[in-house]
Image 1 (cartoon, rainbow, N blue to C red):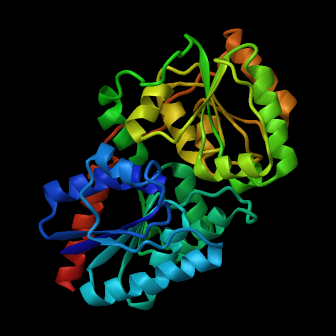
Image 2 (cartoon, rainbow, N blue to C red):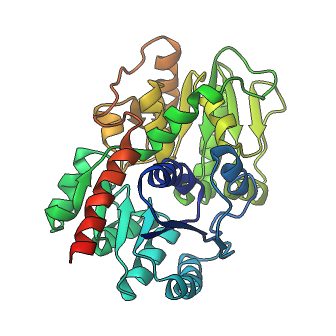
Length: 363
């Protein structure tokens, strides 16, 4: 069997790694890796292949940045040529980025089965481009691999055939479990015993001048009580420069370049609290039992709130200060690891794939 994987952005790389490895160990045939180039900064893309042990992509499409329409269209045009040439038996797509919906659409038009890893997640906020990508990809896909039971419920409510839905757990946690022992010591110098690890990249936060200034101002106030460690996403750094936002030149507020996965996890596992707008970090902190304050008004990962350690902050900066204060006082939200977030998700995906291919060949 020829399985073709499509990745394009940083979160995809952590998701494909254990799936690629599990398929290699179990299913005979060929795997093809296509990197669309949606993330092209070396620290946001190439370094991840090195840290995660992924092979060099068989195809690099190099689409780069652009509007959502430009980027999605460029991926579709370039990927169609690859799929027509190879005619794989299955295309696996990951998460909710533009590469995901673009690959699903092209595959469906060419009558190639699609599997969606991390299906069924919903924020119920259609102003988010990722929500549109999630909804459409799940309508197209033939195999839907859900990370949590709410994903199954969402898909059933949307009329998806239950035979397509497979609750397998969270593949991101497979990568975390595998690499956590290797993420020993952080390379960041002058790190305090207690620090807040901050990541911000969503347009709703960083493209809004007023809101971004409010967030930064609040983080500067928080740095009076706990060190802020802030690896800055390329998009966020661009906005900081455009908006002429200034930061204190003190050790209590550390701005860093984007980090590779191992370096980031080394920071995350010893942090006191995470402040983020990232979906993946909401999941990783829940597994690690680390308090997570999410600067968003909603999340497509509600299990990290109901069962995990995540708290939604929205745009309420006074609430952010209040919640950080609670953490520092020892009033920490206690969470549990959700079902099937056990490091074995990729093996369950492979079991489904084996049954799928058996049915294909028998028909």
